[in-house]
Image (cartoon, rainbow, N blue to C red; front, side):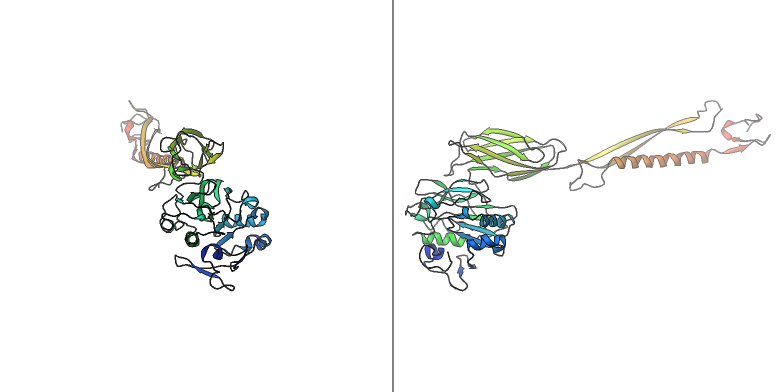
Length: 447
């Protein structure tokens, strides 16, 4: 459907839900100014064009808006392009999946990067009121100014909303509400990729609706919402189970504790539920633990890292609900870093110094000398050492160098010893001998 289309089943989101008319600049360069003051330029790119061109057809845009593509599962090339767009961090993908897609035309996002399924009432005119899940601060604006629009009122934007019933744990909830079928779940949510790609889902009624004030504000918020970084808090993952802290760093050989928080779709704690934790990858992969949630819907898992084992662990928590559905949390990471310790090493070396033959009374041909050398430095457990004052590391090589210095000392000691042993000549026969002998070893004459 064209941005500038004015009527019929293919009319645009502007005519259907935002302004009741095509945007300014149609049909040449359609533009729209958000409530945040940003002017956005729109370009029509058909699904057929993405099927043919792949990622290249959308890579040049910072935002891609998918409006009412109910048969998305039939367009595998388009789905692959959208997945690649997000994975590469090329920009922001917005999925508008509203009441046109219902009954036999419910979209199948099973092959999407972050799969989800929805409950789709269709254009029935059901009324509903929203529940806001998180508190946002700048630069996040996804739920900006929405709270005051429906004060004391309801809208079919909520009641006819296509609402999450199951989803990948990467999804975070921004706004929830019961649709006309009684399903409570995420209606506005988001997920992000490691490269900074952001996808925003809006299941609110944006096709045949009387909720234009709400829809127009949501539309402006989505367009104004930045990505990479997005600043969105992800206070609750859409599966109802969240693991905190999301990231942590500690020394090797210590312990780490994570907390799982379980909430139902209304934000109330789930009490008495068994949670299973698992280190899915990293140096401690395979470690598991279970706990049962308390009155706050929380329980903890603690595990220890073996001494000297560095790397990053990925931790996931799961629980099974009353229907047998398995829910997975976000992935928390734990990085184990090397430890730097200040260590003093003392080395004692005992050696013998050999002298020329000694024949005098009490004269020993060997003397024992003990040399002690002390070295202070930082010893890495294990290397490399990342401590703030980690330098001048004492290693095995350093110890060898210390012994080498002792060897030099011993050589100097012997040389000096040889130098200070003075020779005298016998006045009787002329023989040279050590003055400590007192008598000439040849003729016996006194020194």
